[in-house]
Image (cartoon, rainbow, N blue to C red; front, side):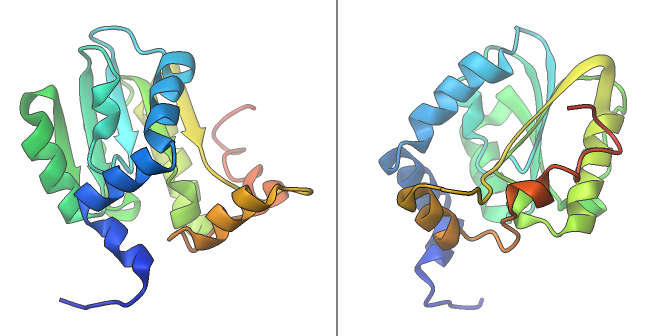
Length: 181
């Protein structure tokens, strides 16, 4: 096991990650995101790309949920906490095998694109498109650098673990081959 002195490495521990999100308001923001943007209905089929410890399930109705994440600790926590509320697998986007293509009502990729290089990000959008039913919805939310950004937003992005935080103009073209915006 590698030990890192970078304080951000502690966010790999699910309890610390979830506590940090609650402290900075991310938990409340997640609740509003689910209520106002995701708007899932009972029994809908949802794919959550980069699901982390699966805490979005705290805010979803009874759905057919499938989440995957690269971090084994997050997946262990999700399986332990949510047991029969969802299915979880440990996988990165490049080696992920999509279960039941074309059957998902909603695909979510929240806070994940800034962890992916351009090739991986394009794979994410391709996977999302392939997963969705014809009338399905893809929802992604990610930070990016913009002109005249306030200092707190800028610092939070700079301190993030993601290595690929992009400028807005570099973010927009990534999904274009797969989605209309």
